[in-house]
Image 1 (cartoon, rainbow, N blue to C red):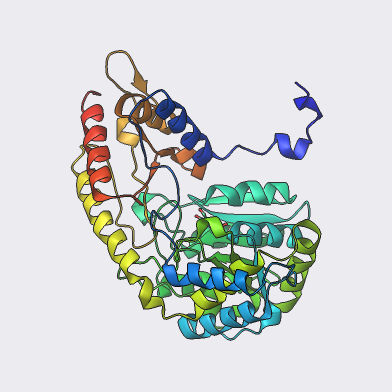
Image 2 (cartoon, rainbow, N blue to C red):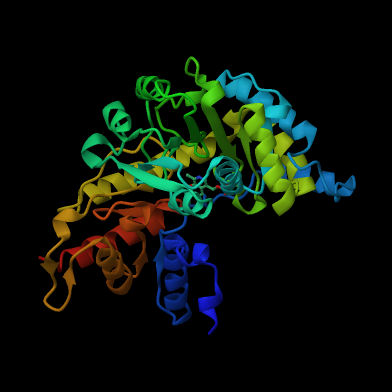
Length: 399
Ligand SMILES: Cc1ncc(COP(=O)(O)O)c(C=O)c1O
């Protein structure tokens, strides 16, 4: 093994806990164990046919060549039109960069903006990759934690307290992965007021779950007065359009930041897949209500899982208003034993669920919260009912 030759940057990077859990589940499955996986953050729907058709037509038209690094002009214009239609925001194509997924957008931003002493406030529980990308880009992640008693949402006083002269960027997602929480307009406005007190402080607003919300309005922080010039809005095709495998995301930002991101991307990967971009342009031009069937299904599943989780003694759940996750607080199980095994933390809790209930979920520690675990409910009602029944049965053996 020559692993000592790997860069120190890589050695300090954590492996993705979601991918690790999926792997463990696959291993058990290969031994013919009937494992239910609720660990991946991926809609179970197929990409809508009209989008697939658009990609086929683009291929037939010969869209198989390199594209401009920041994306096809036609797609960037469609993104501007979408931001105007859905978010009442005015952008020009020069302020848009299309990348291989929102993940690459976030990496481009961090690589463009961060120097060694720069601190990045990350609302916690956070999406796993924020932390690792910030570190890899040379910045210092500063988690600001909000527990279940505040619906996992950071309040202005906490943000104010965490900001110092070195703070350069704030990153959060709303709707949130892993908690499903959605910041209201008033909450976003109050956070914006704090952000505006410091010059040269920017926000990366990850809006990838924008189309998966229940009852809640989820305005972009970019639409708050004076915030557009401080915001890097990240969104993409993966979740709302069920296009995870297409690898298409985009950002909208002040032109100097967009140009910097395009510069980074020009050296790493160039423009995203040509025919995929053509199809994404068609998808974004379409009336988003055509996607409501997915949202309705997610809401039905959310209600089902919430009821079943609340039926398990000791499980504390919030009422997520978006995305397709639950993030129950399980601290009341710590110290419990079934006679041979003891649950001391969230890591052990998820191992118990995998080994004894054969249900794969993800430990909260991967998201910066040691008291919780994440369930993805992007699967059928039958599978969810079976998984919840198994979880309840196993946990009943611990006291
Ligand atoms: C909050 C959040 N941001 C970004 C991403 C990455 O999206 P993409 O598939 O566009 O890279 C995910 C995917 O799980 C996510 O949950």
